[in-house]
Image 1: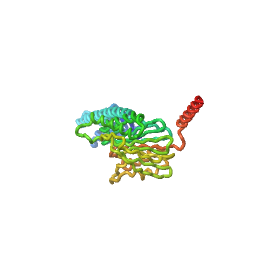
Image 2 (image 1 turned 180 degrees about the horizontal axis):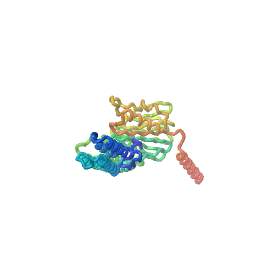
Image 3 (image 1 turned 180 degrees about the vertical axis):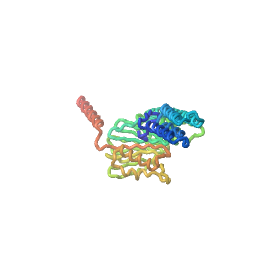
Image 4 (image 1 turned 60 degrees about the vertical axis):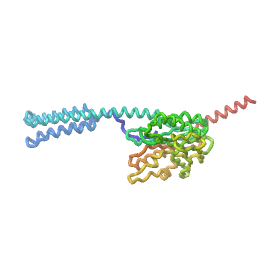
Length: 392
């Protein structure tokens, strides 16, 4: 699952290099020597507090405290060499350096404790992410898949958007959804729908029946857990997709979800017109009320599924992100590279600040069958031949 990459994990111990530690040590030496050479009319000793302050930026409390002790020693050496060690000014300066260093060490310890707590929270969030949003396989039969997930809330890796995929016989079923709301408060509905899809995807022959099953699961969940103040306001838009191995078409049932993009190998971008039904969670459980849209989906075609956090993302002028227009630049790229370009372009468009969770899923049908798919077909043909021989 895609996410913002390159961030250093919170709480990871970063050992300062010896070169960095030389900076505050050299400052102490230079300030002490200058204070001794300047005579009694120019006082530079209070500047020694800069050394532990600078050290706290890259080191922990113990190292910072050690540099503070060196600064205090530097002040003592300066007072001793100038014969003013027992004077009121030098004593006050030493007390001030000790107090300020102690405060810096305390704040440094609080910072490190907070960093460790955040690291624990992040590890729990990553574990929950793995449980809820299983990483999608890179292949499902003749299909290649790639996905990207960007949570709107800072320090969160998952929110109210969701996707899942399942291999059902000689076809693949995929779901992408968007819970009303964003971020962590929408996790309950997202977790429920993911679990319901993983179970129901194998039990229902048609997409409308699958949608009706998901609707029943949502209805039971909301009846038990929906607050009275939000009655009727919690729902999930979803797009259900089925792609058979042997048919150059894609079947889709939309439950109030935006239509996907269909990218052709000839640099074309098509936005199909779907017949969306009501979102999941509003109480519509009749499969006959839902429409299955059928679209061509041949070799080297790419289907891009997304949530409305993508097309509703704005730049600083309030302009929406033009997904179809931007995706047209990369129609010949494989799914992983395609989503990588879209992710970078989207973050550049918004200045790195998203107003809603974002989920993107790219599916491409290979021109040639995957070796596993070919092996399965050969095994089926061999079994059929052996059965025919026994029958004769």
